[in-house]
Image (cartoon, rainbow, N blue to C red; front, top):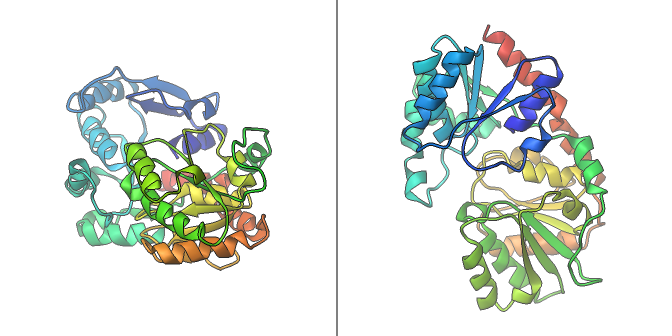
Amino acid sequence: MWVTFASGLAARGANVELVVSGPESKYVEELHASVALVRLPAARLSLLPLKLAAHYRSTRPDVILTTMVTANLVAGAAAQLGSPRSKLIMREAASPRAPSFSWREALTPVARQLSYPMADAIIAPCQEVAKQLTEVLPLKSAAKIHVIPNPIAVDTIIQMSTEAGPWPFPQHTPVIVACGRLDPTKGFDILLRALAMVLKKRPVHLAILGEGSERAALIRLSEELGIAQNVSLLGFVKNPFHYFARAQVFVLSSRSEGFPNVLLQAMACGSQVVAADCPTGPREIILDPTHGLLVPPENVYALSEAVLQQLAAPPRNPAAVARSRDFDVHLGVDAMERLLQNLR
């Protein structure tokens, strides 16, 4: 999202830096040519605010934008140390009510309480995230919340979806595609169990795009369910839209989300989609059954039945493409520009 916003603002004449730390990102090649990419030296998390503060002290930015709770806390502390006059905008990327699956995630509410009082404005990607934030933040912070949905570059996605690419699946077999990091939040274990039910009624192949800590566990589960030959874990894919456009069905099986970009991207490709009605995001994207099907979260049977229904539908969904345009990139950048102007 920050690559998209940075590029969109830079294309309109703003002087934009993207400051990053950690491993090489696969998305920086998508940056607008005028965005300055700044890589901080590798450092322990506890030392990162000092390094970032030093950068702020030398550049004195008018506005600092930051996203995701840990980064918000680091950037907020660095701004207090290095450039206290800069306006500070923090973006919430997930559902504040999302369950925790690790000790780090269990500390997220604390980091949220520490970071958001420092912000001049808080961005929520959808109305439900904004509502949850008002419930968990002090009143003073809750008043700063602005809803700016995640933008997607619809025309670019459509163009990329037509590019040639591999299709390593059995011929004449319908393909289901899912995409995301392999962790419990994304619910790929639920999808595998639903796939086992679908396979009792018709042949199909599942391709999961993405990497993560649950890869080995998902392989074991597919073997236990006896469906390993019907599942491909493809890892990180540079152009997932090629897969979205050719698959018969796209599935979002998440236990929770913030605002699922990948669902919108699949819809932009014309996919027939099935999405878990998890907190938060899917029900603010899929407003009508013509856009796609919503099912109760963590309901294996309902997910399998919805997949079967979409497997019987036409392969392309023009209504889904039309709905995706309600989140086109220029609309998101418009909203971000208005927020920046209001903070002056």
